[in-house]
Image (tube, rainbow, N blue to C red):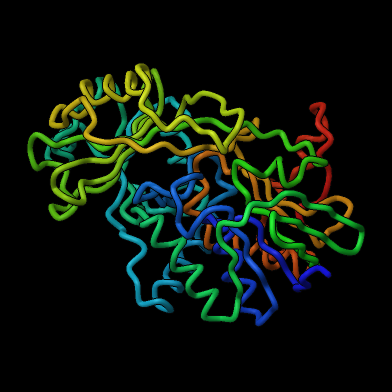
Length: 387
């Protein structure tokens, strides 16, 4: 006989751990399943830190979700007594006519997000250690900062457990069968039945929901930690994060937390991953070419050769926007996928949205622009409603 629960959550990374937390707040019988351990390094929710910001140049429709995400991260801090969010600020630099800088200004205009324009005369004093390319515009968002990514995941799971949730770790899913009125999930050791299910499986989303033919591409991404030559990037000295829209790619990073290294990465690029379970984690010859060029041109007080690296995965959609939706045949199955390398900051609110969708069939949050049906006309079989 299968083990019966009210709700299953498949995948307990940033989004899944949040969904588990929000479902358990409702006093429901909920089971979260994870094929690895808590806050593991085999997916997309690891690497110490993630940027959070409100002046969202990707699309202004994200900003109401971000406003709620900020509230929920603070709420989780208060509930757990842990420090999860550091509002250290964010510098964004790029061509005045480029999509990044134009998007920052659009977000500021539409939603009154606090953004400062930094003059060329003030850049050197305010942002020591950076060489701003000729002709670039520089903005600063004081409310931006970073999240401690593994601690966020751990805290959401710990709070969910304290609220009565059950968590099964190191349990790989073999099959997911979605009936019109119920769901069955089988693993190597267990058989589960549920009335509702949330799928937040990251790079394994298409494996869990193959019938939806989701237009997802998984790409391999590298994170780098490089030694500092001079103490000009330190968090304790008031430095924040940074994002540069260069002609050859987009690069971002964080203040030095240890006074010895700076974490940075390229947001663009990445090679396609065929099997997420066999991701190449070794540093290849060309992996650091772009980041080394960026360091030499923009951050002269960093060593161009990294001290260490980590490998993660982006699960991208064709338009770079998330998919948050209900299964077209059984609306009690909801999913979040394709977070395209910029999703973690939203985890707190995405979990709330998914919990609302799976229990109520709708959500009060404005997520219509994230519906999977936007891809239905490009040859895919995706259909459904965004709630």
